[in-house]
Image (cartoon, rainbow, N blue to C red; front, side, top):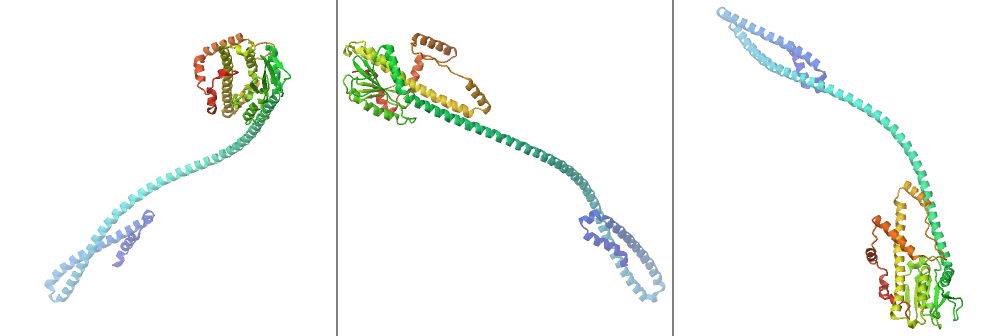
Length: 461
């Protein structure tokens, strides 16, 4: 009897220990065991039916034999007991059969679920394979791109190396050009300083020649040898008075001590003014390019006055002094005439200082503009600018000794420039320009008191 249940036991044992992979790939084995178990179950059902039939037959025999075989009571009792046992066994088998049917139903449902899950897994596997193929295609494409990028990177490295080499050459050239430019600037500065030194070294001779030309031109007596002690650089005799013009220039290119030197020289000329017939006003003539270093142009000492003037101011000042000679005696000058003379000279000195101040301001602005153009303009544009700069040339008017500068021509030129400026929309209104320019302080604060002094008493006795 037990041999009929071996297939069912094996099926149950297999189902208890089955895993996911065995469900996917070992389903054929389970299916075969299910078929064997089904055959055992059919045999079990057939045996059960046979037992039922046998039980029925025995019951009929028992009824038949009860009437005729009363003597066989013991046998009947035994058979009845056996029948009861068989019935119980049959009931047990029926119950087991019902349980197995339930289990079979459960297994069938599980089988359907497994089949459905297997189909889902198969579909997922197909999708996964497709994704894998797509990924492999992408990987192959990426490898191709990486290979191409490596080639491009190699070409870029070669181009970069060439560009770096070219850049180094350009940098070397720029460095050489910069060094040459610095050298040229230094050389130009050296040449400028040399020219300044030459100008300063020849300053005394130039001043002397200029004064002699002015004296010859305007009929002023130039004294080569003075009748008193000392030897001033230049002496003029106007209205029986000796007027001293001493030329002073820096000893070197360091102008920081030049103002102190001039101040000391204002005290050293005292030896001249103490002489008889020497006017108590001495003029120290300095180079024009040193005016911006001088802050004080007038020294009023106890017994005399000293005025600091430039080479360009010689002729107007000598003419102003020459104006005094038109009178027989200085005391014949009326207060109004004396004031007019002082006003003209003071106005000239003020205009000279203001012109120096404005020219210095614009010179500084031009220097800043030149430096900014060299620093901010692109190299190619700067090279073209330098070429045009080299080709440019300014030809200012040349001063001729035998020809007087015509005031009428200057006024005509000035009017022409005003008209051209007005046509271009440039403001030239003199009142407005004068008002704005006069807002700029001429003197520093430490000599503010000197500025407030009235200049009309210049050359006063």
